[in-house]
Amino acid sequence: MHHFTELSDVPDPHKLLDQAQLIKNNPVGNQQIGKNKTIVLLFFNPSLRTRISTEKAALNLNMSCIVYDASQGWKLEFEKGITMNTDRAEHIQEAAAVISQYADIIGIRTFPSLIDKEKDYSDAILRQFQKYASVPIISLESAIRHPLQSLADWITIEEFKEKKQPKVVLTWAPHPKALPQAVSNSFLEWMQIADVDLMITHPKGYELAPEFSSGIPTEYDQEKAFENADFIYAKNWSSYEQYGQRLAVRENWTVTPEKMARTNNAYFMHCLPVRRNVVVADEVIESDRSLVISQANNRTFAAQAVIQEILKLL
Ligand code: CP
Image (cartoon, rainbow, N blue to C red; front, side, top):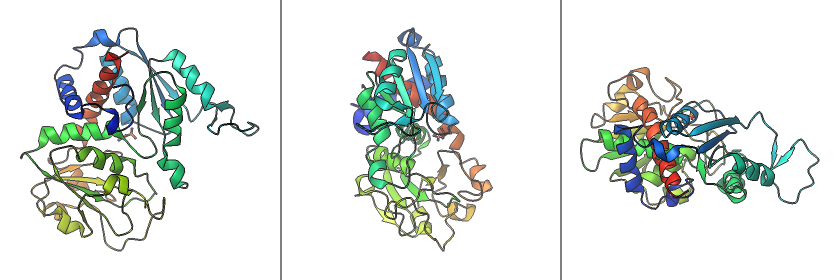
C-alpha cells in the first residue's frame, strides 16, 4: 500500500484488519520498522481522536511525529496558474513538495466547504497533496471520506459481533450544525466488504451520494429499521441533494432507550465527538452496550496498521 485515502487504496482490506488486531495484542512489537522515519500530520480542521491516536500509533512504531496546525499557517492557494495577489501566501505545489522533504509520510485532515458539491466531491485538497507530494499520503479525514475511522469501526464490530453476519444500521441523527457526509460515506464504503447485513435509515432528503449508498437497503422509518439490529451506528450528515443544507425534520431522530429496545440488544456506535441528548440520549451512550470508547481506542490500531503497511514499502 502506498497511499491510504479510500478503500480502493488497500490491496487486501481483510489482511489490514487482521494486522490491526495483531497490533492491538502487541502495540510495541514492531518498533524497528519506524526507526528514523518521520510522519507529518497536517490539520486544516480540529481533531481530538485522529490527532492523538495517529501520534500514539507513530510513537508505538518508534517514529517521529510532527503535528502542524495548518489552519494557523500560511494560507494555501490550490488554483493552478493563478496570479497570487490575494491573502493566499503559498501554493500547494511548493508546500507539498517542501513538506515531503521533512516527512516519510504525510497525513492530512481537511473538511468540505459544504457549499460547492462538485469541488468537495473531487476531494480537491487531498488529491492535490497527493499529486504534488513525493511521499505517501494518509487521509486523516477528507472532504468526503474518513477511512481511518471506518477501519477502526470495522475492527470494533469484528470484536463485539455475536453472530457471523450481524445487522448493522447506519442511522441519521439530529445536529444543530450542518455536518460533512465523510464518516457516513466511508462507513458505507467499508461495511460493504465486511460480513454484515447493512441498512441505512434517514429522513427523506438525506440520501447520501449514490457512489456510496447505491445498492444498500434504505428504510425511512427509523423504528422499523432498528428492528433486529445488532449494531446501531448513529451519525448526522447534511443533505447531499440540497448540498450542505439542514432540512426540516418533523419526527424525533435522537437515538433513545425506547428505540434501542426495538433492536436485538444492539450495540451503540458513534465516531465522536457527539452531542448528547441531541444525537443520542445519555442512557444509551452510557449503557454497557455503548462502544464509543472502544471505537476511539481502535483508532490507534487502525492508524498503526496503515502506517506499518506503508512503511513496509518505503
Ligand atoms: N472521530 C474523529 O475523527 O474524531 P476527531 O474529529 O476528534 O479526530
